[in-house]
Length: 458
Image 1 (tube, rainbow, N blue to C red):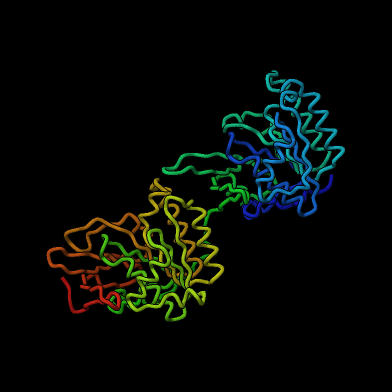
Image 2 (cartoon, helix red, strand yellow; image 1 turned 135 degrees about the horizontal axis):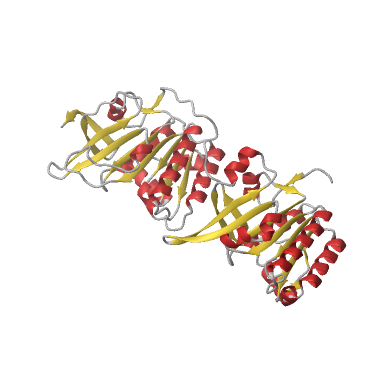
């Protein structure tokens, strides 16, 4: 037998995760109805066909071929050259031996490089387990002789998958599932078994769940966001754009660090972030603004009222916006979009406005911490200086406002409105590796942005 070949999955994001499939091999794609098993399989076949592979799709179905073609035509990725050979589902359930002969004959005739049988679970339905096991052992022998990459689609829940003989015969298992998550449903992909991977990648892949998304364009998996290299921080600083604050921070914000600006609504957090971005743009630093509540147009108008022409930086490509409704985003997809934008433009600064909005797509606090930790670590690894905003409850004393996100941050700045005195105060609660001034300073929101009164303290 020839050596194993590494070939593309046919889905770019899966290739990024797995590095491709080994061929010849048999992969079980399992899950309940509606999770996208067939779409995934058809996309892998279609993309392989476009690259010159011979592909064969064997649906076990009661539907007529014309109806199957109508369904396939709605998929934008579908390759019309794909060979489709349907087998009657009732026959497969009652007479698995005839079905086995039929499958063997069509494989021998078509000689495909890549094959999908969808689904395999009805075959021999109603027969005793011993007979069904014998069927699958024989099918496995047929596939082993042909040296092809085969995907067996199984309508199985998690417990059934582990008990099925197919899972023991398969070289790899892909399990798809879905679960309600607050306002929407999350789709997860797992790889309980994947032979042929190096041990390091195998340990990582088989121990994780990954989010995926299905559209008419196809099947997309979102790998976890990870630092791309070890981060070597130094003591260099970048100016926040608020001179008095830079003094309080010992010369500015630590380069490649994460800063949280916290406070109740109306304290100027958004303006603080825009000022941070504007100052960097003036110095030629590419920047990204991530927003949930405001459109790019609204933020550009707000900046223009202060006298900052951010639109010219948008036109030159120095400033990019990532704007999403928090009820519609998938966190993993959102973080990959941030990653791709960073890599395309080489950003130096990022303003992430409104961490509280993440409570909608990530209601689980532990998962939210994991998301923010991954994002913060990745941004550091790309040498990006990041500023986040979050709402907090009002405190009677400036500096007592707490934030559950503070533990991830290198610096925490609290903005406070004093109702009694009708004044605003700023306090640096935390600044890692800096002998920061912990005094409380007064600031004002003016027509030119935030300005500090460095001679005022409580």
